Image (cartoon, rainbow, N blue to C red):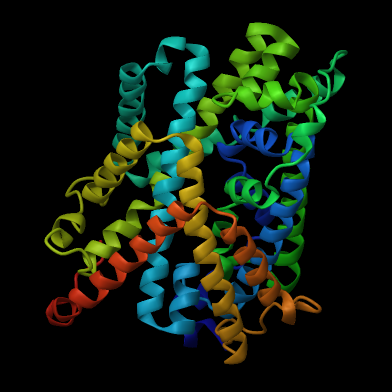
Length: 445
Protein backbone atom coordinates (compact mmCIF):
# COMPACT_ATOMS: atom_id res chain seq x y z
CA UNK A 1 0.00 0.00 0.00
CA UNK A 2 1.65 3.20 -1.13
CA UNK A 3 1.91 6.33 0.90
CA UNK A 4 0.21 8.28 -1.81
CA UNK A 5 -2.85 6.08 -1.63
CA UNK A 6 -3.12 5.75 2.11
CA UNK A 7 -2.09 9.29 3.03
CA UNK A 8 -2.38 10.67 6.51
CA UNK A 9 -0.41 8.86 9.17
CA UNK A 10 0.77 6.18 6.76
CA UNK A 11 3.02 8.81 5.17
CA UNK A 12 5.04 9.30 8.38
CA UNK A 13 8.76 8.61 8.10
CA UNK A 14 9.86 5.50 10.01
CA UNK A 15 13.07 6.90 11.49
CA UNK A 16 13.02 5.72 15.13
CA UNK A 17 15.43 2.84 15.67
CA UNK A 18 16.29 0.61 18.63
CA UNK A 19 18.53 3.18 20.32
CA UNK A 20 16.05 6.02 19.84
CA UNK A 21 13.11 4.03 21.18
CA UNK A 22 15.11 2.74 24.17
CA UNK A 23 16.38 6.23 25.03
CA UNK A 24 12.91 7.76 24.76
CA UNK A 25 11.37 5.07 26.97
CA UNK A 26 14.21 5.37 29.48
CA UNK A 27 13.83 9.14 29.68
CA UNK A 28 10.07 8.90 30.24
CA UNK A 29 10.32 6.25 32.96
CA UNK A 30 13.00 8.06 35.00
CA UNK A 31 10.82 10.76 36.52
CA UNK A 32 10.41 11.98 40.06
CA UNK A 33 9.34 8.76 41.76
CA UNK A 34 12.80 7.25 42.08
CA UNK A 35 13.83 10.08 44.42
CA UNK A 36 10.97 9.34 46.86
CA UNK A 37 9.80 5.73 46.47
CA UNK A 38 12.82 4.01 48.09
CA UNK A 39 11.50 5.12 51.49
CA UNK A 40 8.05 3.61 50.86
CA UNK A 41 9.60 0.36 49.65
CA UNK A 42 11.89 0.11 52.68
CA UNK A 43 9.03 0.89 55.06
CA UNK A 44 6.93 -1.96 53.66
CA UNK A 45 9.48 -4.67 52.86
CA UNK A 46 12.73 -3.78 54.59
CA UNK A 47 15.71 -5.50 52.98
CA UNK A 48 13.43 -7.30 50.52
CA UNK A 49 12.42 -4.04 48.82
CA UNK A 50 14.36 -4.72 45.57
CA UNK A 51 12.11 -7.74 44.93
CA UNK A 52 9.16 -5.39 44.42
CA UNK A 53 11.03 -3.57 41.64
CA UNK A 54 11.60 -6.84 39.80
CA UNK A 55 7.87 -7.66 39.99
CA UNK A 56 6.97 -4.17 38.77
CA UNK A 57 9.36 -4.49 35.84
CA UNK A 58 7.92 -7.89 34.93
CA UNK A 59 4.36 -6.56 35.09
CA UNK A 60 5.20 -3.52 32.97
CA UNK A 61 7.07 -5.70 30.47
CA UNK A 62 3.87 -7.70 29.89
CA UNK A 63 1.86 -4.50 29.48
CA UNK A 64 4.39 -3.00 27.06
CA UNK A 65 4.27 -6.14 24.93
CA UNK A 66 0.52 -5.62 24.65
CA UNK A 67 1.06 -1.96 23.75
CA UNK A 68 3.67 -2.95 21.19
CA UNK A 69 1.25 -5.31 19.42
CA UNK A 70 -1.66 -2.87 19.61
CA UNK A 71 0.56 -0.06 18.34
CA UNK A 72 1.73 -2.18 15.41
CA UNK A 73 -1.91 -2.89 14.48
CA UNK A 74 -3.33 0.64 14.89
CA UNK A 75 -1.60 3.46 13.02
CA UNK A 76 -3.77 6.25 14.43
CA UNK A 77 -2.30 8.72 16.88
CA UNK A 78 -3.59 8.76 20.43
CA UNK A 79 -1.96 5.67 21.93
CA UNK A 80 -4.30 3.94 24.41
CA UNK A 81 -7.28 6.07 23.36
CA UNK A 82 -6.90 4.99 19.73
CA UNK A 83 -6.41 1.29 20.57
CA UNK A 84 -9.42 1.08 22.87
CA UNK A 85 -11.70 3.15 20.63
CA UNK A 86 -11.01 0.92 17.65
CA UNK A 87 -11.45 -2.25 19.70
CA UNK A 88 -14.52 -1.38 21.79
CA UNK A 89 -16.07 1.73 20.29
CA UNK A 90 -16.21 5.45 21.15
CA UNK A 91 -17.84 5.09 24.58
CA UNK A 92 -15.13 2.87 26.09
CA UNK A 93 -12.53 4.86 24.19
CA UNK A 94 -13.81 8.06 25.77
CA UNK A 95 -13.65 6.53 29.26
CA UNK A 96 -10.07 5.46 28.54
CA UNK A 97 -9.16 8.95 27.39
CA UNK A 98 -10.58 10.42 30.60
CA UNK A 99 -8.68 7.85 32.67
CA UNK A 100 -5.49 8.77 30.84
CA UNK A 101 -5.95 12.45 31.66
CA UNK A 102 -6.96 11.79 35.28
CA UNK A 103 -3.94 9.52 35.75
CA UNK A 104 -1.67 12.26 34.42
CA UNK A 105 -3.19 14.85 36.78
CA UNK A 106 -2.75 12.60 39.83
CA UNK A 107 0.79 11.72 38.76
CA UNK A 108 1.78 15.34 38.20
CA UNK A 109 0.26 16.30 41.56
CA UNK A 110 2.26 13.54 43.26
CA UNK A 111 5.47 14.73 41.64
CA UNK A 112 4.76 18.33 42.64
CA UNK A 113 4.21 17.20 46.24
CA UNK A 114 7.53 15.34 46.16
CA UNK A 115 9.24 18.35 44.59
CA UNK A 116 8.22 20.45 47.59
CA UNK A 117 9.65 17.80 49.94
CA UNK A 118 12.99 17.75 48.14
CA UNK A 119 13.13 21.55 48.02
CA UNK A 120 12.71 21.59 51.80
CA UNK A 121 16.08 19.82 52.08
CA UNK A 122 17.68 22.84 50.42
CA UNK A 123 15.63 25.34 52.41
CA UNK A 124 13.96 23.83 55.52
CA UNK A 125 11.44 26.68 55.77
CA UNK A 126 9.69 25.20 52.72
CA UNK A 127 8.45 22.33 54.87
CA UNK A 128 5.94 24.72 56.48
CA UNK A 129 2.45 24.89 54.88
CA UNK A 130 2.50 28.53 53.71
CA UNK A 131 6.02 28.56 52.15
CA UNK A 132 5.30 25.12 50.65
CA UNK A 133 2.11 26.43 49.07
CA UNK A 134 3.88 29.50 47.71
CA UNK A 135 6.59 27.29 46.19
CA UNK A 136 3.98 25.14 44.43
CA UNK A 137 2.27 28.24 43.06
CA UNK A 138 5.57 29.70 41.81
CA UNK A 139 6.69 26.49 40.08
CA UNK A 140 3.33 25.86 38.44
CA UNK A 141 3.08 29.51 37.39
CA UNK A 142 6.46 29.25 35.65
CA UNK A 143 5.61 25.99 33.91
CA UNK A 144 2.16 27.27 32.89
CA UNK A 145 3.55 30.52 31.51
CA UNK A 146 6.20 28.73 29.44
CA UNK A 147 3.64 26.35 27.95
CA UNK A 148 1.00 29.02 27.32
CA UNK A 149 3.55 31.08 25.40
CA UNK A 150 4.18 28.27 22.95
CA UNK A 151 4.92 24.59 22.47
CA UNK A 152 8.50 25.25 21.35
CA UNK A 153 9.45 26.80 24.67
CA UNK A 154 7.88 23.89 26.54
CA UNK A 155 9.78 21.38 24.42
CA UNK A 156 13.10 23.16 24.99
CA UNK A 157 12.45 23.18 28.73
CA UNK A 158 11.89 19.41 28.72
CA UNK A 159 15.05 18.78 26.69
CA UNK A 160 17.07 20.93 29.10
CA UNK A 161 15.98 18.82 32.08
CA UNK A 162 16.39 15.40 30.42
CA UNK A 163 20.03 14.76 31.34
CA UNK A 164 20.02 16.61 34.67
CA UNK A 165 18.06 13.86 36.41
CA UNK A 166 20.30 11.00 35.26
CA UNK A 167 23.87 12.03 36.11
CA UNK A 168 23.30 12.52 39.87
CA UNK A 169 21.56 9.13 40.12
CA UNK A 170 24.50 7.34 38.50
CA UNK A 171 26.90 9.29 40.70
CA UNK A 172 24.84 8.36 43.78
CA UNK A 173 24.99 4.65 42.93
CA UNK A 174 28.73 4.76 42.25
CA UNK A 175 29.55 6.75 45.40
CA UNK A 176 27.30 4.55 47.54
CA UNK A 177 28.89 1.40 46.21
CA UNK A 178 32.36 2.70 47.04
CA UNK A 179 31.56 4.09 50.47
CA UNK A 180 33.53 2.36 53.16
CA UNK A 181 30.81 2.03 55.79
CA UNK A 182 27.36 0.53 55.70
CA UNK A 183 24.42 0.62 58.04
CA UNK A 184 23.36 -2.42 60.00
CA UNK A 185 20.78 -4.67 58.31
CA UNK A 186 17.12 -4.13 59.17
CA UNK A 187 15.78 -6.27 62.02
CA UNK A 188 14.09 -9.55 61.19
CA UNK A 189 10.66 -8.11 61.97
CA UNK A 190 10.97 -5.90 58.91
CA UNK A 191 11.39 -8.82 56.55
CA UNK A 192 7.63 -9.23 56.20
CA UNK A 193 5.36 -6.68 54.68
CA UNK A 194 2.70 -6.42 52.03
CA UNK A 195 4.43 -7.28 48.76
CA UNK A 196 1.31 -6.63 46.68
CA UNK A 197 0.67 -3.29 48.36
CA UNK A 198 4.28 -2.25 47.81
CA UNK A 199 4.10 -3.16 44.13
CA UNK A 200 0.88 -1.12 43.91
CA UNK A 201 2.91 1.92 45.03
CA UNK A 202 6.16 1.26 43.16
CA UNK A 203 4.41 0.78 39.81
CA UNK A 204 4.33 4.59 39.80
CA UNK A 205 8.04 4.55 38.92
CA UNK A 206 7.39 2.46 35.80
CA UNK A 207 4.11 3.93 34.56
CA UNK A 208 4.08 6.21 31.56
CA UNK A 209 6.54 4.16 29.53
CA UNK A 210 3.79 3.35 27.03
CA UNK A 211 3.97 6.98 25.89
CA UNK A 212 7.12 6.12 23.96
CA UNK A 213 5.02 3.85 21.74
CA UNK A 214 2.49 6.51 20.76
CA UNK A 215 4.49 7.43 17.61
CA UNK A 216 4.43 3.77 16.51
CA UNK A 217 3.91 4.84 12.90
CA UNK A 218 7.41 6.33 12.94
CA UNK A 219 9.28 3.28 14.28
CA UNK A 220 11.60 1.58 11.79
CA UNK A 221 11.04 -2.18 11.42
CA UNK A 222 8.64 -2.44 14.41
CA UNK A 223 8.84 -6.24 14.66
CA UNK A 224 12.54 -5.90 15.48
CA UNK A 225 12.83 -2.41 16.97
CA UNK A 226 9.93 -2.50 19.45
CA UNK A 227 10.87 -5.63 21.42
CA UNK A 228 14.59 -4.81 21.48
CA UNK A 229 14.14 -1.14 22.35
CA UNK A 230 11.65 -1.86 25.13
CA UNK A 231 13.77 -4.71 26.50
CA UNK A 232 16.88 -2.51 26.67
CA UNK A 233 14.98 0.31 28.36
CA UNK A 234 13.14 -1.90 30.85
CA UNK A 235 16.25 -3.84 31.90
CA UNK A 236 18.29 -0.64 32.26
CA UNK A 237 15.61 1.10 34.31
CA UNK A 238 15.09 -1.94 36.54
CA UNK A 239 18.81 -2.26 37.22
CA UNK A 240 19.09 1.45 38.02
CA UNK A 241 16.09 1.37 40.37
CA UNK A 242 17.38 -1.71 42.18
CA UNK A 243 20.87 -0.22 42.43
CA UNK A 244 19.48 3.00 43.92
CA UNK A 245 17.39 1.05 46.44
CA UNK A 246 20.25 -1.25 47.44
CA UNK A 247 22.72 1.62 47.84
CA UNK A 248 20.27 3.69 49.89
CA UNK A 249 19.54 0.72 52.16
CA UNK A 250 23.24 -0.12 52.48
CA UNK A 251 24.09 3.42 53.52
CA UNK A 252 21.18 4.18 55.83
CA UNK A 253 19.65 0.84 56.69
CA UNK A 254 16.02 0.04 55.87
CA UNK A 255 14.68 1.60 59.07
CA UNK A 256 16.39 4.98 58.64
CA UNK A 257 15.58 4.99 54.92
CA UNK A 258 11.89 4.44 55.68
CA UNK A 259 11.94 7.29 58.19
CA UNK A 260 13.33 9.73 55.60
CA UNK A 261 10.09 9.64 53.62
CA UNK A 262 10.23 13.19 52.22
CA UNK A 263 13.71 12.95 50.67
CA UNK A 264 15.26 9.49 51.22
CA UNK A 265 18.03 9.77 48.64
CA UNK A 266 19.11 13.13 50.06
CA UNK A 267 19.37 11.51 53.50
CA UNK A 268 21.54 8.73 52.06
CA UNK A 269 23.67 11.20 50.13
CA UNK A 270 24.21 13.17 53.35
CA UNK A 271 25.63 10.01 54.95
CA UNK A 272 27.94 9.50 51.95
CA UNK A 273 29.16 13.05 51.29
CA UNK A 274 27.74 15.25 54.02
CA UNK A 275 25.50 18.28 53.49
CA UNK A 276 26.96 18.89 50.03
CA UNK A 277 25.90 15.42 48.87
CA UNK A 278 22.41 15.94 50.27
CA UNK A 279 22.12 19.29 48.53
CA UNK A 280 23.25 17.89 45.18
CA UNK A 281 20.72 15.06 45.25
CA UNK A 282 17.96 17.38 46.49
CA UNK A 283 18.70 19.85 43.69
CA UNK A 284 18.76 17.01 41.14
CA UNK A 285 15.43 15.75 42.46
CA UNK A 286 13.84 19.19 42.22
CA UNK A 287 15.10 19.67 38.66
CA UNK A 288 14.07 16.15 37.65
CA UNK A 289 10.56 16.59 39.02
CA UNK A 290 10.35 20.05 37.47
CA UNK A 291 11.28 18.53 34.11
CA UNK A 292 8.77 15.72 34.57
CA UNK A 293 5.88 18.10 35.25
CA UNK A 294 7.04 20.36 32.41
CA UNK A 295 6.99 17.47 29.97
CA UNK A 296 3.54 16.32 31.00
CA UNK A 297 2.21 19.91 30.89
CA UNK A 298 3.42 20.03 27.30
CA UNK A 299 1.05 17.20 26.35
CA UNK A 300 -1.76 16.43 28.79
CA UNK A 301 -3.71 19.75 28.69
CA UNK A 302 -4.39 18.95 25.04
CA UNK A 303 -6.60 16.08 26.24
CA UNK A 304 -8.62 18.50 28.39
CA UNK A 305 -8.78 20.86 25.42
CA UNK A 306 -10.08 18.02 23.25
CA UNK A 307 -12.81 17.19 25.79
CA UNK A 308 -13.96 20.80 25.60
CA UNK A 309 -13.63 20.97 21.83
CA UNK A 310 -15.77 17.86 21.43
CA UNK A 311 -18.45 19.11 23.83
CA UNK A 312 -17.91 16.68 26.72
CA UNK A 313 -17.82 19.30 29.50
CA UNK A 314 -21.22 20.93 30.12
CA UNK A 315 -21.15 24.73 30.48
CA UNK A 316 -17.36 24.88 30.11
CA UNK A 317 -16.71 23.26 26.72
CA UNK A 318 -16.33 26.52 24.80
CA UNK A 319 -13.97 27.94 27.42
CA UNK A 320 -11.74 24.84 27.50
CA UNK A 321 -11.61 24.83 23.70
CA UNK A 322 -10.25 28.38 23.48
CA UNK A 323 -6.93 28.91 21.75
CA UNK A 324 -4.70 31.89 22.52
CA UNK A 325 -4.91 34.32 19.59
CA UNK A 326 -1.17 35.07 19.64
CA UNK A 327 0.57 31.96 20.97
CA UNK A 328 -1.88 29.44 19.39
CA UNK A 329 -1.96 27.26 22.51
CA UNK A 330 -4.96 25.87 24.48
CA UNK A 331 -4.26 28.34 27.28
CA UNK A 332 -7.49 27.86 29.23
CA UNK A 333 -6.98 24.08 29.41
CA UNK A 334 -3.36 24.59 30.52
CA UNK A 335 -4.33 27.05 33.27
CA UNK A 336 -7.23 24.89 34.50
CA UNK A 337 -5.08 21.77 34.67
CA UNK A 338 -2.26 23.55 36.52
CA UNK A 339 -4.79 24.93 39.02
CA UNK A 340 -6.17 21.45 39.72
CA UNK A 341 -2.66 20.06 40.14
CA UNK A 342 -1.71 22.83 42.54
CA UNK A 343 -4.76 22.21 44.73
CA UNK A 344 -4.14 18.45 44.86
CA UNK A 345 -0.42 18.81 45.59
CA UNK A 346 -1.04 21.35 48.35
CA UNK A 347 -3.57 19.16 50.17
CA UNK A 348 -2.19 15.64 49.69
CA UNK A 349 1.04 13.74 50.22
CA UNK A 350 3.09 11.98 47.57
CA UNK A 351 2.09 8.38 48.38
CA UNK A 352 -1.67 9.04 48.40
CA UNK A 353 -1.51 10.83 45.03
CA UNK A 354 0.85 8.22 43.58
CA UNK A 355 -1.54 5.40 44.50
CA UNK A 356 -4.45 7.29 42.91
CA UNK A 357 -2.40 7.68 39.75
CA UNK A 358 -1.49 3.99 39.88
CA UNK A 359 -5.10 2.82 40.28
CA UNK A 360 -6.06 4.98 37.31
CA UNK A 361 -3.26 3.72 35.10
CA UNK A 362 -3.70 0.06 36.10
CA UNK A 363 -7.38 0.30 35.20
CA UNK A 364 -6.39 1.82 31.87
CA UNK A 365 -3.80 -0.90 31.30
CA UNK A 366 -6.42 -3.58 31.97
CA UNK A 367 -8.68 -2.14 29.28
CA UNK A 368 -5.76 -1.78 26.85
CA UNK A 369 -4.68 -5.40 27.35
CA UNK A 370 -8.27 -6.47 26.67
CA UNK A 371 -8.23 -4.25 23.57
CA UNK A 372 -5.11 -6.07 22.36
CA UNK A 373 -7.03 -9.35 22.55
CA UNK A 374 -9.94 -7.82 20.61
CA UNK A 375 -7.69 -6.27 17.94
CA UNK A 376 -5.94 -9.63 17.52
CA UNK A 377 -9.27 -11.48 17.30
CA UNK A 378 -10.45 -9.11 14.57
CA UNK A 379 -6.99 -9.23 12.95
CA UNK A 380 -6.78 -5.44 12.62
CA UNK A 381 -3.84 -4.49 10.38
CA UNK A 382 -3.65 -0.78 9.69
CA UNK A 383 0.14 -0.71 9.47
CA UNK A 384 1.17 -3.92 7.74
CA UNK A 385 2.29 -7.08 9.52
CA UNK A 386 1.73 -6.63 13.28
CA UNK A 387 4.31 -7.32 15.94
CA UNK A 388 3.85 -10.69 17.66
CA UNK A 389 6.13 -12.02 20.35
CA UNK A 390 6.87 -15.77 20.17
CA UNK A 391 4.43 -17.41 22.54
CA UNK A 392 2.77 -14.03 22.95
CA UNK A 393 -0.79 -15.29 22.57
CA UNK A 394 -1.01 -15.74 26.33
CA UNK A 395 0.71 -12.44 27.21
CA UNK A 396 -2.43 -10.24 27.35
CA UNK A 397 -4.19 -12.74 29.61
CA UNK A 398 -1.18 -13.02 31.94
CA UNK A 399 -0.89 -9.22 31.96
CA UNK A 400 -4.56 -8.88 32.93
CA UNK A 401 -4.11 -11.38 35.76
CA UNK A 402 -1.01 -9.59 37.12
CA UNK A 403 -2.66 -6.17 36.86
CA UNK A 404 -5.76 -7.47 38.62
CA UNK A 405 -3.53 -8.79 41.43
CA UNK A 406 -1.89 -5.38 41.81
CA UNK A 407 -5.25 -3.62 41.75
CA UNK A 408 -6.55 -6.03 44.40
CA UNK A 409 -3.78 -4.84 46.74
CA UNK A 410 -4.53 -1.16 46.21
CA UNK A 411 -6.41 0.77 48.93
CA UNK A 412 -10.18 0.39 48.59
CA UNK A 413 -10.89 4.10 48.98
CA UNK A 414 -8.48 4.91 46.13
CA UNK A 415 -10.24 2.39 43.90
CA UNK A 416 -13.59 4.00 44.78
CA UNK A 417 -12.26 7.43 43.76
CA UNK A 418 -11.27 6.12 40.33
CA UNK A 419 -14.60 4.28 39.95
CA UNK A 420 -16.37 7.56 40.76
CA UNK A 421 -14.37 9.26 38.00
CA UNK A 422 -15.44 6.57 35.54
CA UNK A 423 -19.10 6.93 36.56
CA UNK A 424 -18.97 10.72 36.16
CA UNK A 425 -17.29 10.34 32.76
CA UNK A 426 -19.96 7.86 31.65
CA UNK A 427 -22.70 10.30 32.72
CA UNK A 428 -21.01 13.12 30.80
CA UNK A 429 -20.86 10.96 27.68
CA UNK A 430 -24.61 10.27 27.88
CA UNK A 431 -25.71 13.76 28.94
CA UNK A 432 -23.70 15.57 26.26
CA UNK A 433 -24.67 13.23 23.40
CA UNK A 434 -27.53 15.44 22.07
CA UNK A 435 -25.37 18.56 22.18
CA UNK A 436 -22.47 16.83 20.44
CA UNK A 437 -24.73 15.57 17.65
CA UNK A 438 -26.20 19.05 17.11
CA UNK A 439 -23.05 21.11 17.46
CA UNK A 440 -21.08 22.05 14.32
CA UNK A 441 -17.54 20.72 14.08
CA UNK A 442 -14.94 22.85 15.80
CA UNK A 443 -11.88 23.59 13.64
CA UNK A 444 -8.61 22.27 15.01
CA UNK A 445 -6.07 25.06 15.64
